[in-house]
Length: 225
Image (tube, rainbow, N blue to C red; front, side):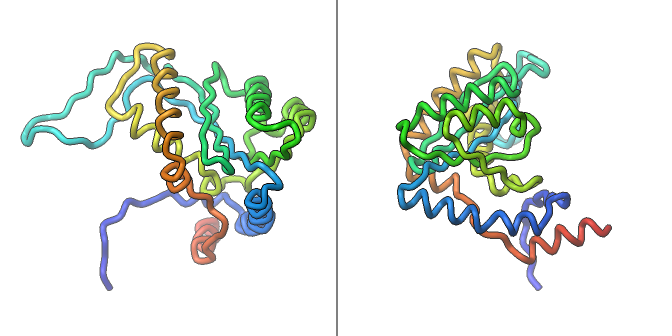
């Protein structure tokens, strides 16, 4: 038996394999409808990005320590709504003072404005409490947006998670921002840069359309411990 050095990844045992399995068929149907031009698929996810630096690995002179300057902004952060326009292989980043129902309704309006009034929109997102609020559901209905919640504890179905990893690699690794406006400006530049190459963007934001039965068994075994 051979071994290889790999990064261990977290498997969320609270996820329900049956609910995950039940999500696959409707998801595949929606994606097929998008391919046929019958609906616009939009994925949405939120992230809270701190102004302070994300420390990571990088090249430096051998034998010397690697330092990155920090203005010690503490826990200051900016909330972002990340939106993946699946049919167009485009990303939109919307900063918000706070991720809540009011901000979500405004983002829904921004999403609606991206498309023609006659376009049908399917929005896929997680089960964050304010996503389920009456305020948000009513706004989605008025805007002609069909909501499709993903199964709980299933971030692997959310391609925008890859946007946040990409964002940290390009924007916050080894960088510290004095105030929110500078981080937001970098987010705008990042959005423009990744949208310039839709093929690379679509490749990095791959969409999961199946589950691995062996992986799901591990979730079940984790629950029994």
